[in-house]
Length: 323
Length: 168
Ligand SMILES: Cc1cc2nc3c(=O)[nH]c(=O)nc-3n(C[C@H](O)[C@H](O)[C@H](O)COP(=O)(O)OP(=O)(O)OC[C@H]3O[C@@H](n4cnc5c(N)ncnc54)[C@H](O)[C@@H]3O)c2cc1C
Ligand code: SF4
Ligand code: FES
Ligand code: FES
Image (cartoon, helix red, strand yellow):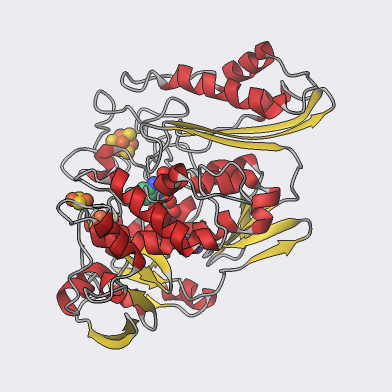
């Protein structure tokens, strides 16, 4: 690790005023600091600022940015009304990491592209302008959608894919005041600035994540990976599907592991609204959602894998209620 | 900068000249508690598992300086050769190790895992999120943050299952 100063902030205002890199659980930041991929010169410890409660807000739930992933997954209200969120969190990392990792930190975890971790290779995300080693290199885990010439990295996390499908809102405070971003619009596609993963501005603090009222829909998170536990997603699907008798009233579907952000397309979802479930319908939906998908060699398999996984999840989500 | 924390029930003061020291290195190199092991140093193997205020975490992925006032439990705090904890005894009975390097982490992790289960926490393989049952599949999933290079997994699961049944 490179040398840094350490400050412990006692509240959010002090954290914002301190002017340094926030450290929450530290499970991603310290990992990257040890490799000198991240080299902050000042760390501001936000573990004691509060923002660690889960409280009702209207018919929804307000989750503090410092709530640990394990506590969020185990919260009885989340298990009952937003099981997709519990499932997505529990599908990620290990119990030890979930006990320490926070809601805010999880949203800001960085890519798992192998070259991003390797200081000896070019990587535009780590060092803008140096090139992208993954194109023509090891890219088995990388993006099939929304990538650019500059970068084909994926956002690797699970929880944020569920937050996108659940239409959650990210609440932010910062030097220029408070604002919100929809979970589905929090992460950025690389374009020609792959060094920026999200729409959070430098110095801004995530204060909480707001879950809207539960839809009462059937919620499923399915994660496909190389081993059954403690591995990142190759492809994941988060779905919240509300049925109305024999037809689909509303479906929200987000894909993980395929792009630099959870992948959702409202116009594809509109294909499902008011329709009776069928294999043909789900196939059309998957084709629309995956339109323009492009493999890079090693990861070509993700395109049919994503298609099949979407169809399987929608079949399961509509099966129980379809009669 | 000095920090004070409670380790295995004892208040300890840790002088830190540099905030870069991880909790793992502080335990092993500054506090003379080498029972907690360093495997990967990146959160991937679980050899460094300790309890922080009762919860299992990876000591390699947190800084000592962040733990002013906290309570840490290491393998040294769970039992002694004369008075083994139930899981320590079960690991011996079931041959839950070969080289033993992962074992402190396995035992601390399993101790905390059984407490999580008693609190009703679900896992990724729980069919019913609100009423999980601790079968072998659950034990394996809940212990997936602890790797064993000697692959003693079947015996580790046996030791944990037996302990879970005897304390339940
Ligand atoms: C071995 C391993 C396996 C893993 N497997 C998975 C997996 O399968 N699925 C998955 O989803 N994740 C996985 N993870 C990643 C894990 O979920 C993240 O490391 C964790 O969620 C990060 O949270 P944290 O609180 O520790 O963040 P930190 O490491 O503390 O911070 C991460 C980043 O967020 C910033 N930050 C933190 N909080 C805030 C805030 N409130 N406001 C503004 N900025 C903030 C920090 O400055 C830093 O840039 C794995 C990690 C490891 C080490
Ligand atoms: S895909 Fe992105 S993160 Fe990976 S090497 Fe290319 S620029 Fe770097
Ligand atoms: S040494 Fe900490 S998880 Fe491997
Ligand atoms: S007993 Fe050797 S690594 Fe587990």
